Length: 555
View 1: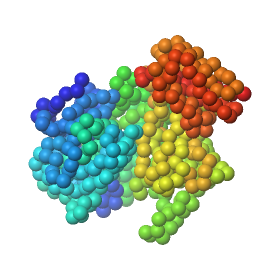
View 2: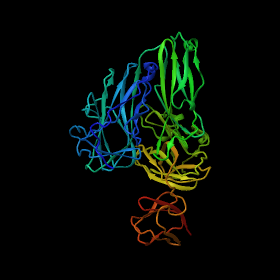
View 3: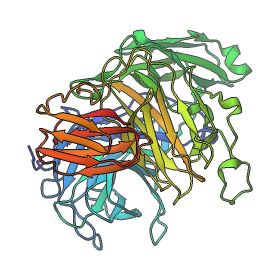
View 4: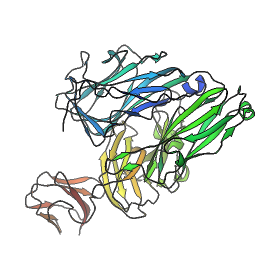
């Protein structure tokens, strides 16, 4: 049901103002961190933030009554009634939020706002504003976007404007407002937000004991522990520091130390290993949203205020973000655009991954956004690069979500995902902008593997990152039969396929390589699709609500 929000619906502040002290200024400013994010998880908390850095407070998302039309669908915020021009300030027609800091931070500084969104309008413009009041007016970034049928990632980084204005460093405790506005061709055009991330730096107050982590968000694979380090410094400490895990899901986390003595801290930095292992997957199949496991790492000493580091953890059927390659650098001179061979080849295609069992061929390590590790599948005209997951229990219906892009703009860009030997997804991204996609629901076996590959063509280097596999409550499209689609039949002939009983439905025919061969938007009750070449094809039939896919062979 479409609705207009009441004026600043739910202006309650969702506070994560936890007592903490963090590492030195030089260390923190060398690391860009996620200050906070909004995931629009459908339900009572759909406007609230998550994964907020300690010492900061993020408000709920605010949308004014006379501004946008909104509705919440499948853990997204769907908006319309955007202005047709941003030549003047959009006023209340924006998605906005406020940030404030506590006394344990000397300052914080936003440097980019990352949007995960799709838009129905053609070419559109996006602006980012800041200020000390609702509907802020200071323009810090403007970008031009394109029609995005699938979710794309756009970074609204400071300084992208005619005056080079930056988001300011905030040193007082007052709220600062940030806003995103879209220019769309018509008021009917929609912008759907999947997530908004706020990135920047935070500078701590001085302390005898400091840590290098403000907060931690992690993703793991079911059945495998995930461990991350927290570095503790205390060259001037005179008291021992006690460590503990508290919080709602504390039982899923362990630490390798319960005490750091003053003499250990005085001797140099100490590392505490935090391990998370979940006995359950965190995806709620009814809401299709992850319920994060939350805990707090506490450091307590008589000479400092208690340091509390919030931890947010999600557990997937399979997860891989190639974080082992975060520090990879191209072998090229400063300012010279690298080619894919300037990045290190993965020796023997034996990848550094969160769990063992990944394999592939013609693979290179890569870094997106300067800090995020990923893998480049470097195909050529003679060799097809690929990446294969470990064996996973996919005997329940599941989806795969992945981000991908081309290494260079204007190259082939074809990308495929297979369940064992069955094609389950194909797409094209000829740009070097990251694209996030989710497959339809499939079902495999108790030891199935997922294969990612690019089309065999010169220059078709595909960057792959953030692979997530989760179970689904939807019916799989590769089950025998038509699911809830009315009965019909697909008859195979030497020169094509005969379809009966699917009047009004849509059919697509793909070669096994993933290339679309034929398409009918609206079938007749008795229809025929000619196929000239012998071989294997995938036939996909859908009625708008349900669909099924079937592999056929023309002999």
